[in-house]
Length: 101
Image (cartoon, rainbow, N blue to C red; front, side):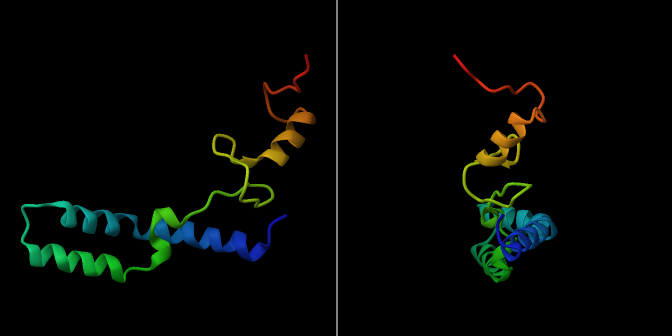
């Protein structure tokens, strides 16, 4: 089980990303628009840089929903490899069976 503080930190980051998503997108569109004056684009760049760092989507790290483990994460199932194996062994994941040959 991961430390609760690390899991809570990721939850906080996800909340910030959601909160600032529209504002960041509008500023990025201004920055990428080559028809706008350089001064306006530079001001948008400064505003984007002044926003909280954790409001960027790249700061989010995927973690297992059950244990909070950050490594060996399966995106499709939102689980770590350990929990995936455990749940599959107990038959709690539909269509997944233990392989043997």
